[in-house]
Image 1: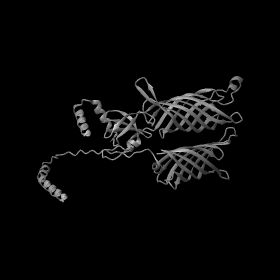
Image 2: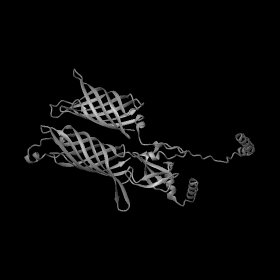
Image 3: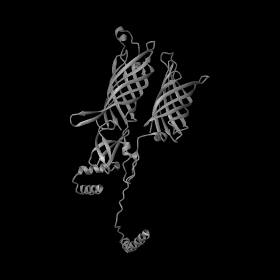
Image 4: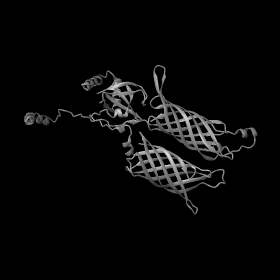
Length: 253
Length: 212
């Protein structure tokens, strides 16, 4: 009944152009998703965060426009033009034009299991030197992913920068504590410290194998710990072997 | 039984309508314009604004090398409302040490070696989110956050593993633009003067960022 009224009203407004602002807004809303509240009400807050005050509740049957998303909050506009932030889990219960729930929700264990992308930062020990790593990974199946690692380490005798591409296999993607093994290769640039007799920078190929553990924390966050054995293929008679231990925090998407 | 009755009735109605349908088909003018517009609901189409990029400028106190102007860029990924990843890159330049100034002798380091660049990869925690009220009209979201991370400092022709800790304040002028104030301490072990020493380089900065 309400929707019929609204239809009639909007027809009236648009045909008579009485309220150009309203029709403009309606035209703008065309590019956004709209859904209707199915629960008794949906709470709207002043800002995207659980601590912010609820200043409006949209009732069951009210049509809301989904403007944008920030972390796990969605900015809604009601047909009265009131804008506020609702939790994504509440918005997930609203219905689309076909009467189906939107079924969007904040990331959980299932999202962790089925993640497509992840990225993170790690710090730790790289052959008795300090090291910092940034990495990004793409999961092309639930078990396999490709990762790009950028590492810089800082030693008393030399610094190094290393870029590797790794194939990562996790045997139990649905486990909260999910172990993995890696194999990869790349390049490494080593520069001796300025306090030493100047020898020039050198670039070598590296290969690595490793194992580690990802732990799902909450929402999008996970903890990552790993060991890698890196072989630096130098010009000298013996290859250099480096043990690395790192811990870091990552997020998935 | 009722079902069968319905079917018979429907068949009768259809039969009665047939001539009318045939007629409308002949005139080639559709009576009804079917305008059923199914809106595709694709939740991925919702515009997400979890990334923040921006620039900052401030003062960096480089231990033993005076306080100098620092400026840089930063990018952040807001993973939840509480936590964000942030990468920072900044440049500055160290001045003469007190010793170099007073002794009046030859400088200990080349000018090029005094270029100070750093980066860090950090995790931030929006510990105290809040709201700021300005006059009667404006209410703006704010966050007081703690941030910590690791990275590199290139100074005096060497790279140093650097731990950065700090506290900052972010005021969202609207959904997209923010004003930030940061205090950070960049800590590393330096052996530029012959023996290892831990140095603290405190940075005050302010900047603007954009959520997208």
